[in-house]
Length: 317
Picture 1 (cartoon, one colour):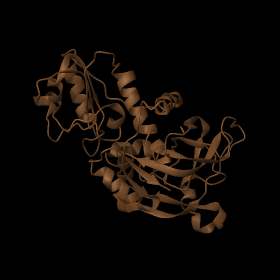
Picture 2 (tube, rainbow, N blue to C red):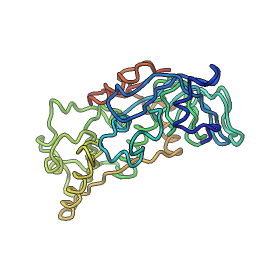
Picture 3 (cartoon, one colour):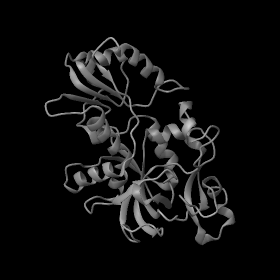
């Protein structure tokens, strides 16, 4: 991605020195910490490189991964996002908006197109610079807010159930945390606060565990003898997050036919197109819990961090 002669970090620091037409409002994070570290301020507006699209952001969603990156906890996330402070000063990944400009090598999108997708350069801003192959056209039947909920959570649910669990007709599947961002794309809701699935006596071919609130052994007791467990909360120890639990489970799996398959979803353009087809056909409907203005992004992430969302949390611009 090309940002003119300004680096990602510089972009967030030189806003006051730029003329008004080269600025934008954005949420900026200069260090790891609680939501209070987020600043709503002026920064430099990004410039699209040859293969990029400049998107006028209308909506962006946030999820637990954004909260982990903001806090830098578990600390293992800093290996990917910056050891001492976030490498990208603008948080956010998912985006929906209107194409403002395209790079010279972009041929399938043009100014005025309504699009959605993801960007590693930060989306909690008035504008985001996005590689063209990370965007698709927004279905007419979706609002901008609905479209912004799809990329990260929708792709995660799709890859977990299709590629990792290989769910087939006739399989019984349990999704914990089904009211959260990923869960709403994967299943209907079961209220885990009223019903302990580990004590129900039923066994499942696949358990997609987005909460990981139960001891591992209890969860495995609800798994079929040859079933697959996919842990996906990202939570765990302060330093290494869920890795300790994963290693322990891997070791225990050596003595059984049950399979533990933790995974990291990979954003893929074709998977976003697959989801778009279902959205256009009305076979998939995004669920939105709350919306916040860009200036209240800290409140949105504080709410996500509390861990009780019922659908996606969306920030409008």
